[in-house]
Length: 148
Image 1 (tube, one colour):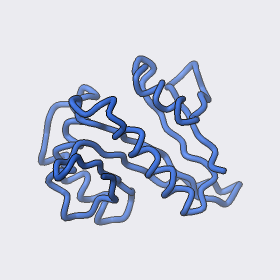
Image 2 (cartoon, rainbow, N blue to C red):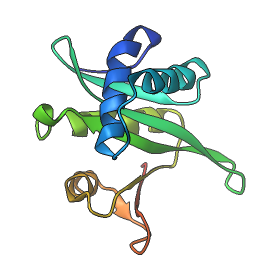
Image 3 (cartoon, one colour):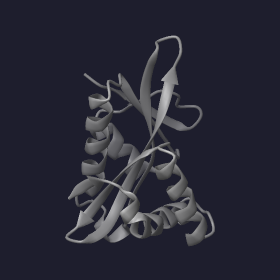
């Protein structure tokens, strides 16, 4: 099941976010992780979707708004995607991305952008499978998907 995160899910979301940070070589700091997520949700600075296997939180994705003055539109950056290792390759990552894309499209976005590490080939193959296109191969692995 995929749902939009609420403050009531802060404990589960903070734990997932801390694991995400550890995946990206940061020190575990559950208090800091929960505080960061709490600020984003309370200040309405991001949109978070969570994946559940029965009642267990197993993954999340976080979107941040991206504005274009020239185009006068708001698009979205899919900034974070994390699924617990034992639940990877079971469809949760794809479901989270699809929920994020559906949300962005419902908000009138023209595209969703994301970045991942150049050595994260697992994530890259998932993103490309879902239609994201590589934009800047010499820097970060930056992709975007136009919404139609």
